[in-house]
Image (cartoon, rainbow, N blue to C red; front, side):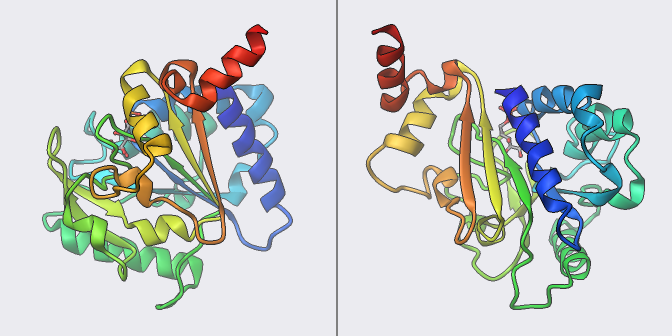
Length: 245
Ligand code: 6PG
């Protein structure tokens, strides 16, 4: 799964070279992306990307300093930016350590509008947004039942997590849904029940499962799950049966 995701990144970055704008990527936090980063920094893949044409952003951040072990920027810096020697001018982190998360969210929104040349009401359109999913169905820092789920105007808002680092900064669903490609990267048996509920649950209940808010308006939505995370999906069971026949 991680290799497939890394190869998709390389392919998309290659396609973006035909564009006059940089390949703009928003990374997710958590641990799953590190499996993909480990493949991406391998010379066989890394050498296929013109990294000076890639701009890195973050879909969410914990309100901690950039060298904090819980910082999404810190995780990407150690496992991706430093190994690839990414130029710091191509990295746009959310200022998690700011004293006022709401102001930090507004500042990041201004960075996005400036970098994309997208004044309101235009939605900046990312080329690629990487997302994970929590066992509770959250994605980015869009947690079940929280105010950020209802935001339809702002690009970036402060929000709260029910566990871990409480104060967060996060993309809103409309910003994510403006992207060209959105990839969910989900692994582990602990995610299987939620993956089934989100993807095959029959009903839409995005306040309970915020991952269901992610439906790109003019882009592609991809879910990459490993066998464990997909183990309760009907479509996966059909696939296993057909392979066994
Ligand atoms: C974060 C992430 C979050 C993450 C999920 C899955 O800041 O925590 O953006 O949405 O993607 O919690 O995390 P794992 O990949 O560690 O399971």
